[in-house]
Length: 244
Ligand code: DC
Image 1 (tube, rainbow, N blue to C red):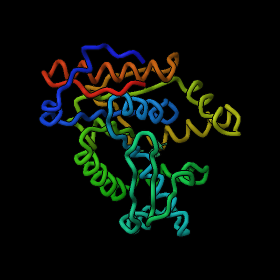
Image 2 (image 1 turned 120 degrees about the horizontal axis):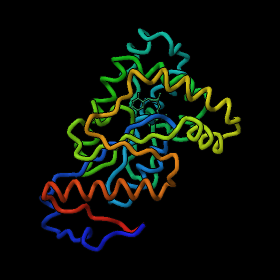
Image 3 (image 1 turned 180 degrees about the vertical axis):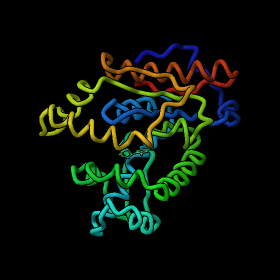
Image 4 (image 1 turned 45 degrees about the vertical axis):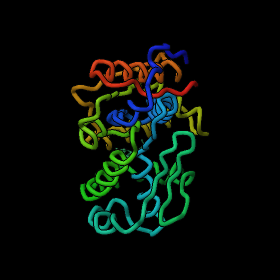
């Protein structure tokens, strides 16, 4: 990605006094939030938080314990029990539950099929949102992705993006990463979109990016420019950018 020379001019003094940059990236599953959030975090020299991975980690632990995830009272009662830790390096994200690395396991179909039920339990959200706010507050600048970052988790984030893509395109991107057909991926995706709709919202001040006809680098570039422009308008130093 090419970076305008005037956007990379921060002094050490400025970096000590600038308020940390928070970029909120929300949108439905399969819109490309993870790749673009990681890419933008790397380009801007920020940390990265995948909040969906935290809901997945709790779901993994509940399934592992044999808990019926449709029993919201049982889920609520147990939600605080596991210790969920998450890494914020955009180059190598990881998630641990009680010290066990579950980074790969949380992407399995059993977890994907069960996580919406867990994420809809209010006690679960209260716990994980508090943890997410602590991580964001301590990060010194971060790109956080999820469904409610711009509206609930970090409503004061100066940069908010709502990333979409049309349903068929999202399904075909997802199907290309799995052994499932596009048709069955789209049916699963539509079901999850419905289940997640109560927890998902576009902030009024979010910039909507439709990634249907864009590639990864183009979407990352839009987010980086948005972050630079927002800080320029606020009279703040530019983020320290990394070459990509
Ligand atoms: O983005 P993902 O597919 O990894 O998200 C997993 C689940 O968690 C999905 O059902 C939506 C839910 N989620 C949520 O409710 N709030 C968030 N901030 C992030 C994800």
